[in-house]
Image 1 (cartoon, rainbow, N blue to C red):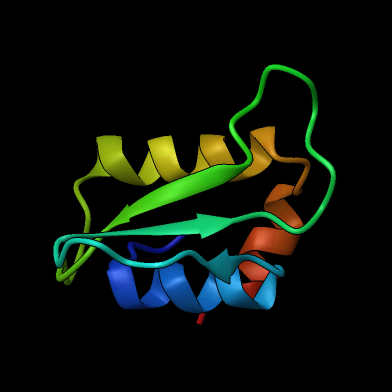
Image 2: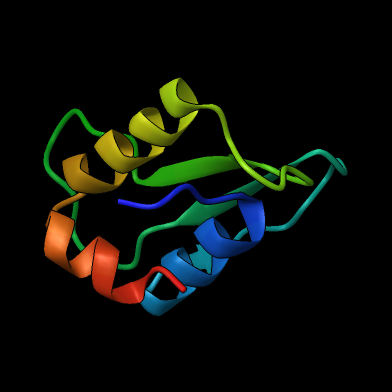
Length: 81
C-alpha cells in the first residue's frame, strides 16, 4: 500500500462510512464507525491532522485500527485516494 497522510485517511474513512464527531481541538479529529463493532473494540478512530505523510509505524497503526472495526485490506485500498 502506498504512503498516505491525514487528508487521504479522512477521505478513505468517509468513503467507508465513518462520521465526524464534534471537534474540540485543532490537531486531532475523531471519526466514528457507523457499522456495528466487535465487543471490546473502540468504535472510533482519532486522526492526527496536518500530516502530509504519516511515518510507517503510524500508517500500520491506522490500518490495524480500521481492520479491527471489520474492514478488509481490499476495502481500505479501494477507498484510499
